Length: 50
Image 1 (tube, one colour):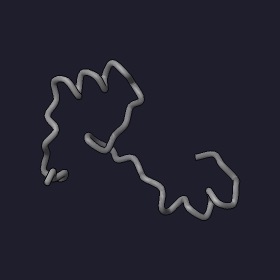
Image 2 (cartoon, helix red, strand yellow):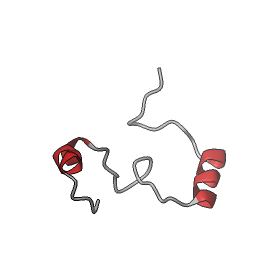
Image 3 (cartoon, one colour):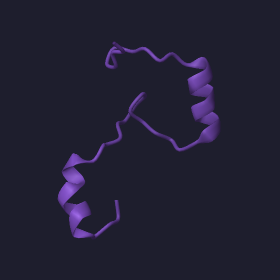
Image 4 (cartoon, rainbow, N blue to C red):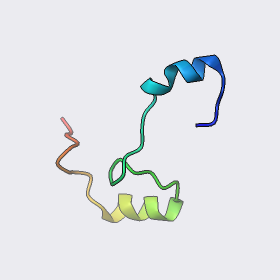
């Protein structure tokens, strides 16, 4: 992030991070997101729905 505000800089270690692969990778692409949500699975080895 390109912010220099004190409250942002102090909270950088607490902000969510993006991963290198799905489901932690965000592409900000509507068509890809829609495809993945429509066809893709919501279950994996890391996320548990209870």
